[in-house]
Image (cartoon, rainbow, N blue to C red; front, side):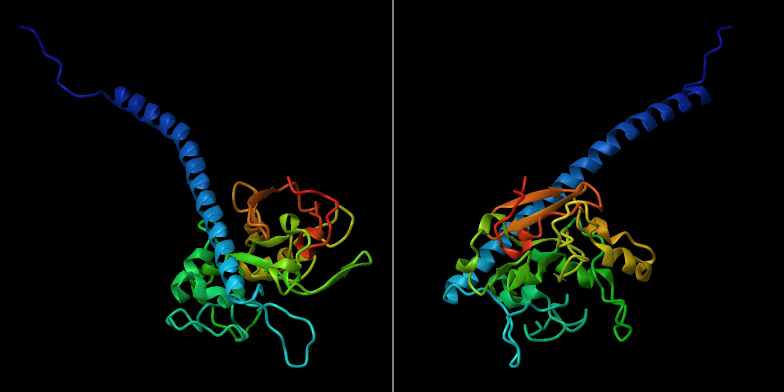
Length: 275
């Protein structure tokens, strides 16, 4: 009498199939991860182009002036120094640009559809930005509330600077920038308004090997040790930057002991040309 083998896989065959699937998945996942990263970078760069368009439209309607603030007792213009569009996550009422908790982009909100336009300022590659945990008076609101402020602008975009004996006056109009193609308008950053050499990609020194982002290495302990410096290099270790001239490019990470030319922030004639 002939015996017929039962239909189905043996244990060995199942293990072989599972092993093959695991190998194929291991080969596919890095490719999917790279594709996702490239997609996020493309959205980020599109956002930055849109930001330039909105800023340009603002200046067209305001006699060439860019948005800035000025205190009654202060002579120099400055930018808002916070990261909020609304007073809290439950509100849809846009803060006024003079509100002490306003994000710098609030001044341009009209050209992005009001509070709805805040998503233009969200980089899909951003995981965490400044949530002001060093201010004990603030609630710890959800990360989502802050991620619509994931592009930083340096104070020297409007404020006057004086480094190396080269004084750059205040910038209140787009026409004030003598070197628009080598001056950063805004860029990937965890800090919404960068103020100097410890919170930007430049150490504000002529030493190209100077340490950068020292403030954020110190503040990471407030956020469970999160490595905030990678928020400046969130696209495969590259920083997406919008330049005053309107183009968008990336600045590659070399090391935390490599400073970019500070003149890219101040608008002074740079010694080093962006690549």
